[in-house]
Each structure stands twice: as C-alpha cells, then as structure tokens.
Amino acid sequence: MKRGSVGVSVLRERLMDLRDARASQVAAAVLLAIHLAVALAGGVDRLEDWYLALGLRRADVFAGKLWQIGTHALLHGTWWHVACNAALLLMLGSRIERMLGTGALLKALACGVAGGAVAHLALVPGEGAASPLVGASGGCVALLLAVTTLSPDSRMFPLPVSAGNLGKGILLAVAALALTNPELGIPGLADAGGWMAAHGWDGGFRVGHACHLGGGLAGWFYARLWLRQPVSLDELRERRRRSEGGC
Image 1 (tube, rainbow, N blue to C red):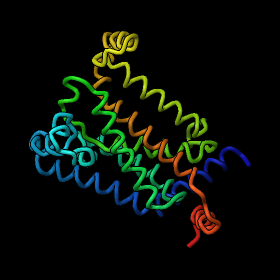
Image 2: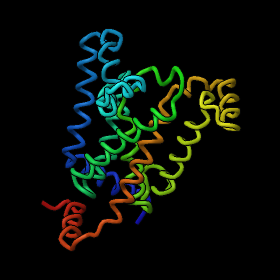
Image 3: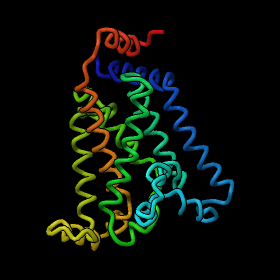
C-alpha cells in the first residue's frame, strides 16, 4: 500500500474515532463553555477571586482546600490555552475511548489531573507556588502517555515516529524542563537552568512543566497497570467490535 493511501486511511480512522467519542466531546465542550463564561463575565482579571479559589496553590491546599487538586483543571488563562487542551483531549481521548471505553478515559484523565497537581505542589518553589495553576494540561499529557504506552508500535500521524518513542521523548523533555528550574536549586541542573534563563528562556520556567511531568507519569502508570489486568474473551471481542466500528 502506498504511503499516501496509508495516511488517508489513518486520517479516516481518527475522524471516525472523533465522531464516536461522546465523552471526549463533552469534556472538551465543558472546558470551552467554562472559558466562554469567564470571557463573558469580564475575563480572568474580573474573576480573580474565582481563580484564586479554584486554581491550585500550595498554601491553600495545605490549609485544607483540597478541591483545588481537581478544580484547577476547569479554568484556563487564555483562549489559546483552552483551545490547545480541548483539541488534545479530543484527539487523544477519542483513541482511548475506542480502545478501552469511556470509563478508562475518565480514569486516565482524573489520574493525570491529580498527578499533575501533586507534581506542581512538590516541584514548583517560591513565587511560582503562590500563583494559582490552572488548566487541564496534566490530564491531556496523561492521555498522551496512556495512548503511547498502550500502543507503542503505532505511528503518531503525521509525525514519522513510533508512539512509544514519542512518549519517552516527551517525558524526558518535560522532566528536564521541570528539574532545571533554577529556583529548585538542584546542583548542576540549576546551573543549566540559570544559563537558559540568561539566554532568553526565563519565561519558559513559568510554564507548568512540573504539572506536565506529573500528568505524564500518572498516565504512564495507569496504562501500565491496565496492561497487567487479565482480559476475558468477551472483553477482547468487545474491543475488536469497537475498533472495527461495530454497533
């Protein structure tokens, strides 16, 4: 089969996944609807109190506001932020829905949100920990690592690389970015981070790399645990039916 026809076949399959991914569609729509409501209410600055109450901050969590571990994923800073996360949720969530079903999608997403929150609380020091973290990026990275772990030999169209290698590369990249934060003070890594900041990367350390790392690890662990579960013949038939687009 020619490469072009393979690409068209993969694209058609992905579009079918998107069409049938009801839970992914609803989750993405909820994120977009919430940000639309924020915009109509005057924007982030006008709703600062809401962001402080629902965004993730170490001092608040340690004071008992544990709901922030989950609610921070519902808010976003900009339209670009929420649009990227909604697109990733649709593309990646739809594949997990097809492979494992709605329940697995929701569990992987929840694990990623929680894992991202824990990593952020643990690895973001100083002023960064005082500013609220918002966004569903931890959950989205978890979905990506779940997909690449569950199907490591597949191709992540249109990238010319296997899913397994892509997942490993992303985990290594976000770990490097999270751990080279100069404020962490890790010997050697802090020096590298200081050099990066001095050469124009200072703003890069304000991105939630620790959240991405925690979410990715949570997604990887979830997929590994799922792969260890015994599978019945009926479950295999059901997965085959879903993958073939049966009713």
